[in-house]
Image (cartoon, rainbow, N blue to C red; front, side):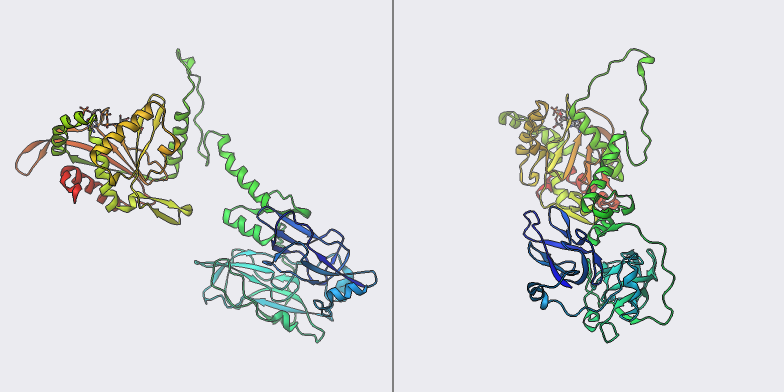
Length: 540
Ligand code: CAO
């Protein structure tokens, strides 16, 4: 008998790669080229094959190890005679291996000799930091699997974290006592393992020594406890075998994406699902809705031949129009919109603005109500910071912007564009007036650069010069609110004694109700109306 140490071959330029899955256990018989473990680098995952056929004596790497080219993977006992070099190279690493029952169901020879050297043990849920029942979200092994010490057996999930429960013994899974979706508690039996035992006949002490539970994002829990199974504890094998061959890293990623692994086409050796397969599945799934007019099960609007009813012209839409259409639909479908209305009394503001007309001409500019609106919005945004925030991390966090950049919707012959005025809070009314004219001009002349339209935290859409009593603008996601401004009109306003003619500016604030509540929106809009009603307050 000779012992060969299999080494990591050239792994294509990667310095080191992580062991994401160990495919064999001591006692397994392996063929030439059969995968021993799976390494995953930034670029790819790869199976490290055995260079010889024989029986695995010792696996020299475990999940999570970083291996570089030349690192030892496993010691394999081959049929040939041992050479001096073989025994020297492996002498330190190899203890006399305890005979093990092979995991392979078809390896009848090995199982025949098992009883004397193996022991049935119940693997139970360790201390998981709570006495409460937790969700069992994944059973990572099936009956017949051979597991090495440290291999993940199941994954548990609490409100706060998910944690993998590893095996502290090597052996073969004989029966599963739990299934996915079930709630389990500390001390519950997970599975029955036919464990590798030392010559003394008990579970190898070094293998049952505590090993920390690998926690995905949880405080470390204590180790899996093993206890000898009571006589007859081996139940009939669980037939709900998962039939999906994928490593823990891939399973975890699939869980994060919400991808059912059984739907993923595998391209790895022996039907193993690789990370790349998952990526491909997700890209296809994302691309799928664009092949039909609308996604998420929304019935598309049928094409109608309008020429059947009279003369028509069909014209190609501008690129801006098409992009706007996509953005609007995306926002409309994703954002639960609420619109709040109010009128700002801008009688005094307009008197002041008109008083500056001559000065504006002298400065070569034009002072419309818009710069006042922008300035008032900047002040109100500073006091109501949620309105200037965005959802991040898929909705689990909120990003507050500590800058006040406001987008301004501009109606152009080519379509709607939204240039952004930066640092509105730091600019004077004259500077804002100049910038509105400059950006609106650039928009109409199609001279805006992409950077001119990025970075906005809030948008103002003013239809004041066009007309209308009010409208409900669509939030310019990922912003969370937009102000729609309609045409100011003189209205009779009751002052407690009589009706007074007051110039009323209709405002409509649409907001993303996932982020902004009615209270937030109400406070913002009320403050905005107060600022516009008495623009001296902009100075406070
Ligand atoms: N009420 C009454 N009059 C108003 C007003 C309002 N709310 N807003 C502007 N006006 C007046 C201005 O004072 C100006 O009159 P004077 O010259 O007598 O002062 C006149 O209307 C024209 O203003 P303007 O449109 O040239 O300038 P502006 O600063 O108000 O607006 C801009 C600039 C770029 C926002 C505007 O030209 C524009 O494109 N608006 C359309 C935005 C849009 O399409 N929104 C919809 C998006 S959702 O589909």
